[in-house]
Length: 409
Image (tube, rainbow, N blue to C red; front, side, top):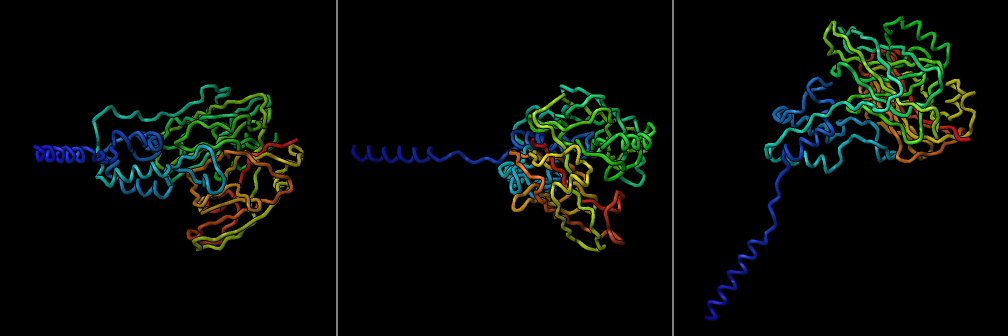
C-alpha cells in the first residue's frame, strides 16, 4: 500500500511539472500585430492612389518584405529626418521604436504568419483641420513633368488683418503626384507685388524657394496631413500680404492631368508666443564637383541672421525663445546640423529633399541675440560637372536652418 502511495505521488508530481511548463511563445501575425502597425505608420502614403506603392495587401507586403525590413531598420521609413532624441528631444517623431521594429523582424523570421481572419484594418484617411478659419486653394493646374519632377508656386489671397497661424492641413486632389507643399509669406508689399506679377493667375515655375523675398511659415509632407504648432504659439502672418504655396509635383503624373490642392489654416488674432521664422543661411560655399561628401561650415549670431533677413525693425529684442527648427538643402544635400556651443539645435544626418519637415521641441530653449550658431553642411557633388554654389536652380545648392523664434520682452 505504501509503495502504491509513493507511486501515485510521483505520478502526480510528474503531471504537475508537465502542466507547469510556460505557454509557448508565438510569433506576431499579420492580422493581429503587423497590419495595425503598418496602418498607423505606413499606409498614409502606401495605399492605392497614394504617393507610393500599396502596402495595404498582405501578399504585396510579403513580396517586398526584405525592403520593408531594411527601410525600418535603417530609419529611412517612416520618414523623419531629424534625430529625435540624441540631438534634442522632439515631438511627433514618426520613427518606429525598437519594440515595433522587433515585432516586424519576428514576424518575417517566422515566415509571415497571417493569423486569424478578421476584418481588414481601415486604411487611414487624410486628416483635415476641423476648425479652419481660412481655406486656400491652388488653381487647377497640369504641370509639365515630361522631364521629371516639377516645382510650381501659386500666389494665394491673404487676409487684411494681422493673424497668427496655429495649425494647418493640406489636402491634394491627387495624392499620388504631390510630393510636398511649402507655404511662404512675402516679406513686404514690394515682394508681394513681385510675386503677383510672376503669377498671372496660373502660378510660376520655382525651385528651392519662391524666387521673391519670403519667409517659410508651413511645410507639408505626405503621411502627416495635419500639423499643430506648439501650444500657445502661432506664426505671424502679416496683414494684407498674400501667401505663396510651392507645390512639388512627382514626375509620375500623367500628361494632361490637373491637380488642385487645398490648404486649410487655423489662425488666431493673438497668441501667447508670437513666432517668427528666423533663418540662418550658409550662402558662401564653393564646392568642387566629384566629391562623395564635402563639408562646409558657417558661424553666425542671431543678430547677423536678423540683419541678413532685413528684420531689424520687426525683431529689436535681445532674447528669443526657440520652439523648434527646420532645415533646407537641395538635391545634392547630404547632412546638416546646427549647434550653439555644445547645445544641439537640430541634426539631420541623412538629408532627403523629398521629406521636408518642421521639428518641434519637447521643451523650448532660450537664446540671446548675441549667441553664435554653428552650421555644418555636407553635400554629395558626384553628379556635378562644375563648381556648386548657392542658388535657386536644380544644379545649385542651399544650406539653411530655420528657428521658430518668439521674441522675449
